Each structure stands twice: as C-alpha cells, then as structure tokens.
Image (cartoon, rainbow, N blue to C red; front, side, top):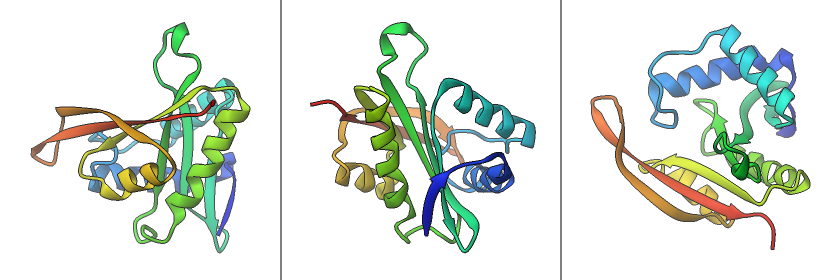
Length: 164
C-alpha cells in the first residue's frame, strides 16, 4: 500500500468509495449518493483552499482516502480543521485508515493549524479507536443529532491539539 496525494484521475474511484459509505454506513450522515460533478467540485474546493487529499493505493487502485477542511466558516476558526477518512468496502480492517491519518496530521501542522477535529458516529468503534490511538480525545457527544437507517444517531467529537 502506498499513500500519495490524490489527482483528478482518482475521483471516479473516490466517488465510488464515498457513495458506498453513504448508502451502507453511518460514517456519513447523508442519504443520497453524490454525482461526479459534486465530487469534482469537492476536489476543486480542497485544492483552492489549500487542503490536502490523500489516497491509499493498493495494486494501482485507490482503496481509501483522507482529507481535512475548515471546521467552521468564521474567521476565528481558521486554525482549526476537521478531518475525514474513508476506506473502501472489502478493504476495511487492513490498516488503511491508520496509514491515512498521520499524513493529515503532518500536513495540518505544516500549514500552521492548531487543532484537528473529527466528527465520528458513536457506533463507529474502529474510527474512535483509530483517532484515540493517534492522540485525539473525546470532547463532546451529541445525542440523537442524526437520523439514518430508521434510527437516531449520536455524534462524537474528538480533537487533537497540533501545537505544543
């Protein structure tokens, strides 16, 4: 497995991974699959904002991706970013998420960010443990803020202070 910056050529596979997650998991609190145009706009916004997108590649094919972006839109939040990590169905449990998180943390530090936040579904034990192992701590738990698959979902916020 190799971690590298994403390119436009990766977008069809990244869209496939993301849409599968929308349709089959609670990792994304959305209902409808995204379109190629939406994924392109997302990628362009990342590029324009100076936010990285990393791809985990295995045998020449993306099997996961990660990124970060702004936490909130107001100016005082400019030093805080929120991360996202997605792994393809059938590839989970192979250490891909673990490989995708350190480059995000390093990139955030290099860009002078102070805090990285992760919003994680409370039932996503793998992601909660992944972030905890990287030094993130739980700072909030919002009860029943999402509704998907016929049930209410709790959202956990974890944070990592990037600067000493």
